[in-house]
Length: 283
Ligand SMILES: Nc1ncnc2c1ncn2[C@@H]1O[C@H](COP(=O)(O)OP(=O)(O)O)[C@@H](O)[C@H]1O
Ligand SMILES: [Mg+2]
Image (cartoon, rainbow, N blue to C red; front, side):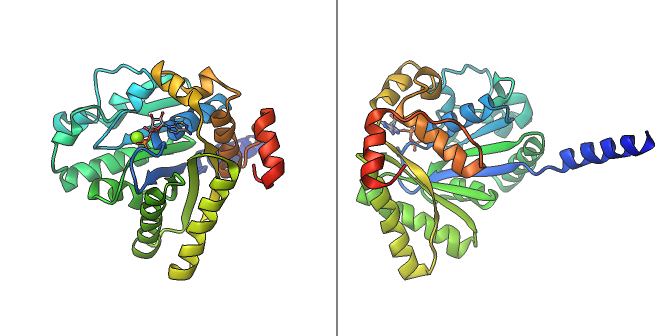
């Protein structure tokens, strides 16, 4: 009996030691789909029992609460201006899924001071300890408001579209993260591709350039095609993963989760996607 109790205590200890993952999603260019990807990945993770917190760290264009139709009296502004705790401003989406909203008007706070940044960081790390996954939805570009969060994330997913400008800016971010910040766990995700071939080419091209100039290649974490169902979901302030569970975009989010979290979410391809996958050997 004593043995068993000891084992149990060990198991509990192991569990509390379990490391949570802190993953930031960023991009060089804005409007590439970061917020939609983060929100849907979080929702799908929560639906398989993972405890997830999303932190809206887009201090310029905070909008995850609007995207999801969430209402809250408080936001990060209360943390910065009124000394509230990050924990107190969390919105519960479901038992496993919470959102920390940045709120509108935050861009008016021109300079977030160093002590405020470190308060946010310390409280985020405390929150991360109690969750399986902390997803950080950052703004685009390389301002201090963005790089602060990237520096503190262990894993970073850089999202780009196949547009040349987005690719160039995406590569620039990857280069800075890799060379200047010595980040190791850098991933690429391509969004809004016309077809699988275009998505695959985008990944290949980024890695070709980075291999040549910085002798690095970044791990591809998949892609999503342009999906008009997403616009419908955004308009109704519902997540596409909830509204259209079999849409191309939702399937791509599931594949991302399977790749990133070694999960085994069932993906039922629609016939058109299957046809393309067989043509290009992608998926
Ligand atoms: N795969 C997609 N197909 C169609 N529209 C998309 C796709 N991904 C994103 N969008 C649209 O692009 C716009 C920007 O998305 P958003 O998630 O807000 O980007 P970001 O957070 O990078 O600024 C939104 O209107 C969204 O609905
Ligand atoms: Mg966004």
